Image (cartoon, rainbow, N blue to C red; front, side, top):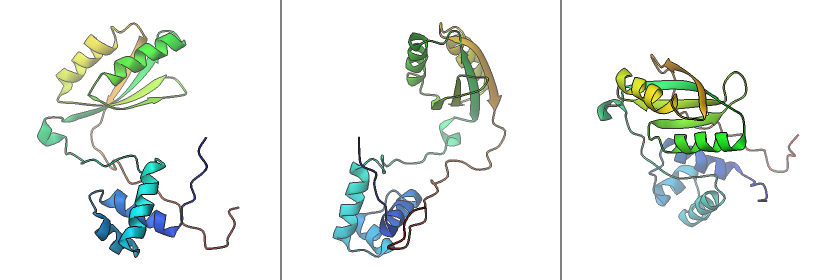
Length: 167
């Protein structure tokens, strides 16, 4: 088990800056957070090694790539056992159109966030892939009409003043 990572104000500034622009070079990042480049580099590396920063990627606009329909799909499994859950997980991991997949409580077992070119592609995915799969009992989809907020940066905690104890 890994020890909890203590984040100070500089770490939080580094994380906030990287969430805003993951392409920042070390010198520019250091200038933004008011540290030397070497201190900033050590801190960034530690945040990466500890898994706080999981990676860097470009954010692509789906529409110019022909991906116009975002869908949230609830899936209920046919039976609840480890093998069925494993089979469904394998299916989901193999589908590029699945952006996110979450195990849920409530009336559905999974919530999938999908992106497809059009409604015909969605119909094919549901009727030819999901519903015929041995692990799936029920599928319910809702098409996104408009997105009010998407992939926001994580809310970072405020640093505690030096010497203050967490309550």
